[in-house]
Amino acid sequence: MPNMSILNCTIRTIGSLFSLNDLHKASGGSSSHKPANFIRLDTTQELIDEIGRCSDLSNAYEANRGGKNQGTWVCRELVYAYAM
Image 1 (tube, rainbow, N blue to C red):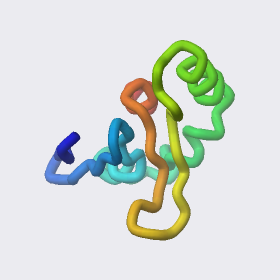
Image 2: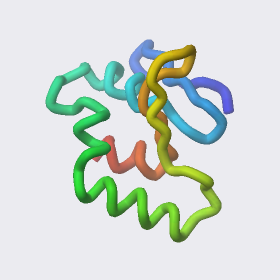
Image 3: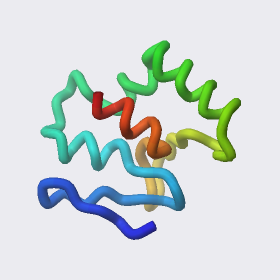
């Protein structure tokens, strides 16, 4: 999947996962909306569990520390939930 751009911010992808860190930057970078805070929410964890049970995705999200692709990477459904 090619990278996309929102407000001149490139949103990187790895396979079917989107960089939540890039989306956070594109939305203004408020500290209250950090990707780590979103992933820790009980409602987010419930959604991740549901996606795992009901879809063909091998993983709904990845957290990579260090390296070329560091950050939080999420599936399209979690992008929508983060945007809300």
